[in-house]
Image (cartoon, rainbow, N blue to C red; front, side):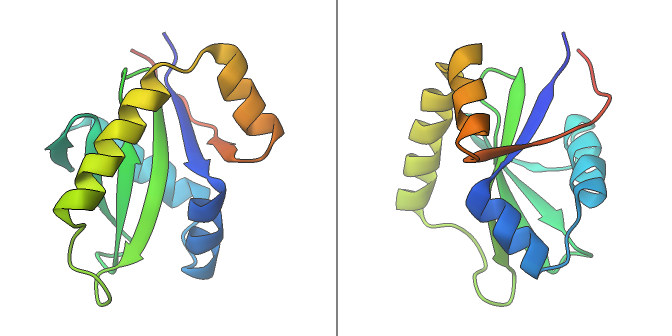
Length: 121
């Protein structure tokens, strides 16, 4: 099965401002699949980007599609709070329940932007 990789609209805006392109996100995704990310549990992952200057929160509940959800600069925020982690876990569970039609609706509404890659499971 082909994995699908997305970024949220807000993540896309933040990544653009931080000069983080899709090719870097694809590379980071490949590293995540190889175990080079922090598993925060409940489908929430933290991955370093942009030569360790930024952190991303990636939601991967269900393992069929992954969503870059949040981007923050290391200098501004060292980590997410416990309440944020609980919220991200809940959101990952919500994403897990999405049908293909709901994913397509998120794409149509431009809430998700698909990042094309060649990973399969």
